Amino acid sequence: MAKTLAIDLDGTLFYPREKVKMIPQENIDFIHDFIDNGNRVVLCTGRNLPYALMVQEKLERQVDVIGCNSAYIYINGEVKKMSTFEPSVIEEMVQVFKEKFDIHAWLLMSKDQSLVITGKMGFFKKTFYKAFYASQGIYAEKYVISDKVFEEELEHGKIFKLMMFFGLGQKNKNRACEANKYLREHYGDKIEASWTDNFIELTPAEVNKSNGLKLYCEMTNTNADDVYVVGDSGNDISMFQTYKEHSFCMNHSPEKIKKFAKYHVDMVADIKNYLGE
Image (cartoon, rainbow, N blue to C red; front, top):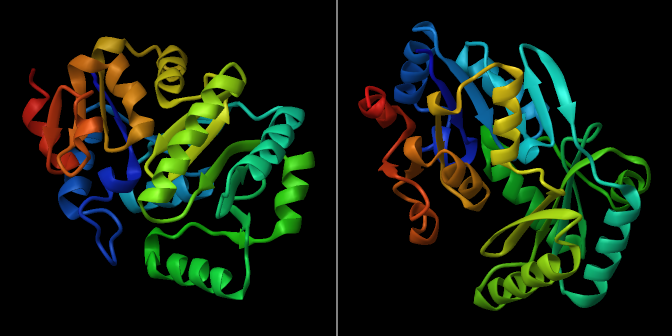
């Protein structure tokens, strides 16, 4: 029976990081063998579509994409589904959080913008973000730092995902925790939130990797028992819970995330040792 492997990118398919190739050769070889033997791979990522297509090119195989935590689903070269925020909901939420929480940076992904960054952007902070993305090398997403573009997308754009960065250090982790609690209490029926340390990802209600993968299985006539999932962070937990029997978490992940997966692996290629089960 053909199998479907849903793979997260950052910290998972890309681990350990390669400065030139992007994807470790062991993972590439494993995916080539997996697909060439009649199986299917879907990239299940928080990244936007242009970036996911660049990864597809690196893999040199046809793969599908569940992106922005399932805000869009891309199958056989075509976007089959898009979920975007209601503008009134997201504008209100952004205004409330600007007033209540000291958020260092806002990041936005939409249908027309791969990544937009705004926030308290003085000269030094802009320089920091530019230096940070430059340091990512091949892993960097195309981005624009612009208050104007951010506001235009909030008002008129089809927004897939919104992210809040609270800054470094334990104090900011605590603030992110408080903000996540506030989100769930006041916007739990309108927004899906995924919190990891200093960072919160927001998508439209019920838009998460697990629900996206369920819909993907319906679209491709895939049996849930034949789905294998692998990831490393908070937005992968929903997949681990839904596909528990074939769930894999990276060994370098925090224990609070690893506990949700059945198996732990050092790299994606290690999954080949479990495919017979």
